[in-house]
Length: 297
Image (cartoon, rainbow, N blue to C red; front, side):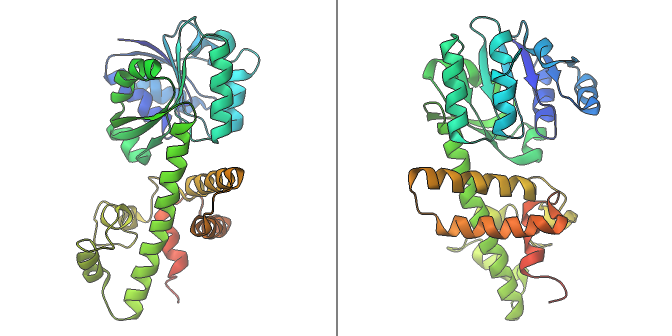
């Protein structure tokens, strides 16, 4: 079992760290929020008062942070991971950030002899809690082989996407599809209702036809057809509106950087940006159904 330092114990990082503890790893974790640290202690891990304390002596350092800015600060800042990590420690960043930052931080780590992977996840809070996340991993093959048993304690699928930054590339491309698909399902459900076709009937037909997609069959944005979907719990989040807006923004920035045309993703970003401005950031991203088909319409 490994000595693991974990930075970022929020809605995603906390359950992930707890699953590592359950797998028998020795986990020291840091988060600036005291209640997040307390949850790690309750799960059997050790909470520390500073990031450097979590990193020092760790064989593996994992991070789950909000944005690229925090990743750069955590790894490259004074007293950060690169300055504190043990020689040969494996670094794994599971945050969803821009590709350029992932690659530049990995290059800085390599210059210090520290292997680093970008390993963003899909599966939301439910997947983090259940240990069923999908990890999309960018970095060297040797580092991936070392990381795989660690990541498998937190996920059902661990996929090597290629060199550094490719994990982030896979994540933003995947969520580009997800954001567009969710809006398409919402629009179809809204149109069906206007035409006198019930949500349940459309679900039964489309789930077995060419309209089938994950946003319909696993995460249906209207109450009823999929009892486990957030639509049946007042859109309590598994993956928030704020997160979807962030990922679509990253996709747009990446597309602009390489000259790729993504008109549907651009429109999806604008819709989620508008929805988020209505004080809905904390709802599940499928709640965009309530903007596309408001109840008073």
